[in-house]
Amino acid sequence: MKIEIGESMMLSYLKHVKGCQVVQLNWKPSKAFSRSQEGERWSRHLFDRIKSIDAFEGIFKKSSFDQLLRQSEVDVLGINVQTNELYLIDIAFHENGLNYGDFESTALRVVKKIVRAIFISQMYFGGEVASHSSFCTPKSSNKLEEKIMGFLDLLSPYTFDKCSVDFISNERFMETCLDEVVRGTANEADTSELFARAIKLFNMNSLLKNRVAPVAKGADDPQLLENNLLRLKSKTDLNTEFSVEKVIGKGISQKGVVLVRKSFQLRKSMLGQGNIIIVPEQGFSYDHDKLVHAIYKTQFAPGQPADKSWNKNGTYSKTSGYPNWASEFIDVL
Image: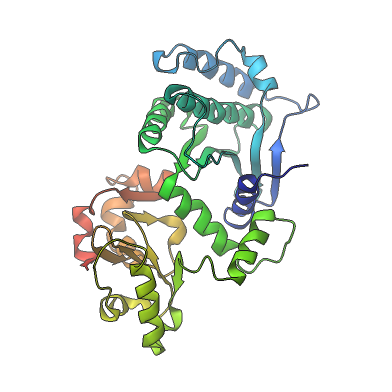
């Protein structure tokens, strides 16, 4: 059976990052599976509700609910039995950017896959499990990303209490999926995972070391740290000088890595890693963990302004600049 490299990557993601004890590629329902009556009733109602919304016109074309289910397949499905969470992921890699035809058709097709996964989660796994339905792609246009996220916002009032939905692409894909899989599989020896095996082959030639630059030993080797920072600088078009003092002064001498990012981002998955984030294109850096711990009570705690973004999505980001409440913890390069 042909194994897609993207699907293999997400299998490793669910296993080594999300901690799923059970993972399967190309999951399809069997006629032998029993259906949750409540889940099916809820799913049929959502199906009819989506068809009635003008923005989703043509999303299911002429397919009935039962036809849609017969066509269903999830690229990667994972279950974390300890946290009682179900992950349903579809992934696509198009070299020139995600494209299933015209702009509108592509957006609707992505949403249809996400919605179909919601139906599967409710009908075959029941409402007692916390479900997460995502579509992932490493490359899409910003306009398409905004369109799809807009569609998902329209769905949110109907799905938030049953299943979280997400579209992960571009830099967020690289940070949330690729970087996490590279870290999570670093010490794994399972050669049956195609993507993890490919990463190890690349690492033999140090091809991935330009993305994440380890500097844990930089405290007692200034030249090593300087070389790492120069390598980070070479990834940008700026003339900014990354001085050892500016970065070492933020606590990186203890542990962690210097990560280059295009914009301001905070992530739950990065907590405890001691990372310093550099945003060279915008000219600033910050200590990720120190910032999160300092502003948690006023921004991320339940009921605070960024509560939903942090506690539901596990992330907070700002495309241009950084939020005013973070300014105290920002170093201008």
